[in-house]
Length: 214
Image 1 (tube, one colour):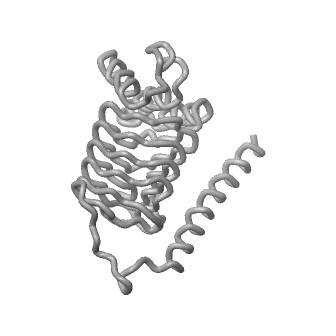
Image 2 (cartoon, one colour):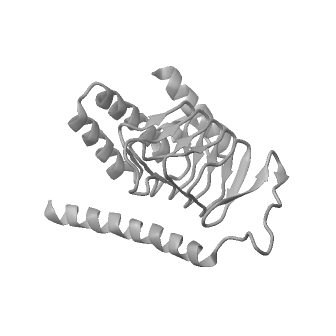
């Protein structure tokens, strides 16, 4: 347990230039608090204490603004920078050395059953506000740009941007496969943006109703 904690703190120091001390990271970083609470929740979930697992995960939401389903599988040296608004769904799988920024959603589309959420490979970086929706894989060492909406598999060593996201770089080289015919449909892009916005509003409304009923 302590080895994992030391790894997590070292990962924050390595990836966040604003991190000035171990004590600051341990006490003041919501991303670290969220992953520590998730490990407890995940242990409870795997040992069939489902209610208490959800209880711990919901406490984490209130304390950090980060929602991680207790069944999600998360690797080593996971770093959530800032963290507010991050949502990670039940069947999400995350590899080692992954970095997420604020507002990221690793979610489903509502159309799938069973495995509904993405698998994130090792060394992936997902920028602020990006949405990765569906049961596909984002390959190792890929980067997802801020605000991108990823709806299909991303190969390893790629950079994906846009709504819906498309690969623009692969292994450091630009992918010039677009022309005047094969360009993203602007109507589809706007519909996708609206769908994501509606989903966020529905979640906020459901949370508001739940708070009102307490």
